[in-house]
Image (cartoon, rainbow, N blue to C red; front, side, top):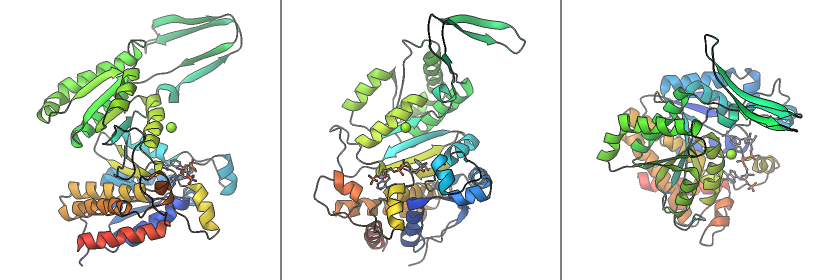
Length: 403
Ligand code: NAP
Ligand code: MG
């Protein structure tokens, strides 16, 4: 069989621990035998980030700007324990944070569904994609632990030094806490656009929720910007595809989500997205079945698995044990990137390959061959296999489907 050609490269970002092992296995078993794989390789494994003073992460993000499509393996975000384990020069920042800061954009997380792994919520038959606004609010807030009696005020002074606003927040008669947070029209607008565009691209309705009855200015601003972008830029195109945009209160949204059948994009403010994405991914069955893509406003796409480097499995693998880590979300990161590359370059063969590999993964699970995490939540009885045996089974189905 002749290998599939690529016209342009994908930015490949290698990572750490168990996912780094899976990364190589996926390339060897499922990609290199079938594709003349063209990638620009960046080693984001922690030792190389340390060696390059994290320059490699910045270089990788800049490469995504050039080539528009990237695929990333999970990476360690160092903490004190990792500093020791890897003898690091510094506690380097999260690579995902660095890449997101350079590319801007929104992260969309979508569960992979297959019939024998039933979501905990019975009505969910289609995936729910969560779009989390990853800028400002609680995550860039200024906080103060109030030691005792005194007053806290909110003031705003414009560029010319004129005080435009000053109001008391609270008069403390004892210890307490106070917090100030912010967001910008620019960031909210770019978030709204990414969400409408993603919903349009994937032909799904868009939901957005906040608490504007209580937070009339702050959440009201989010609501108004979404409404304005919808009406001026997207309504006509949504109507043409019979798609809808729903704004509702966050508590109402939560109730509706649980009763829904899925099949929509749920845009969440930063904190809501943090909390809801973990709830939704767990409720769909397994963290190992969650994909993630960063979509930037100027059309760059970075695909990855939502889970981490699976440290606990890696330590066992290092001891020579067979492990049963699930490679599906990492495979889907690759197929997501290959499919996007194919779409941008009008390479139908590459798109077809990505679709076929996705199907081969699900067919393997439906044939009762799966990793331990899936066997534990599967509706049918299944004996868990090792990552290696699972990949071999997927390869068999892929070869048959492509022949
Ligand atoms: P994790 O790697 O996602 O793993 C947590 C647990 O979830 C695992 O121990 C395993 O449970 C289960 N799990 C996750 N993915 C799985 C898979 N593909 N197959 C089977 N089981 C899977 O999270 P963590 O242990 O909190 O973090 C480990 C490292 O990853 C940290 O250094 C963190 O900084 C990094 N991290 C990176 C990213 C990223 O690059 N995007 C995201 C999150 C975390 P059992 O052990 O019970 O089998
Ligand atoms: Mg979270």
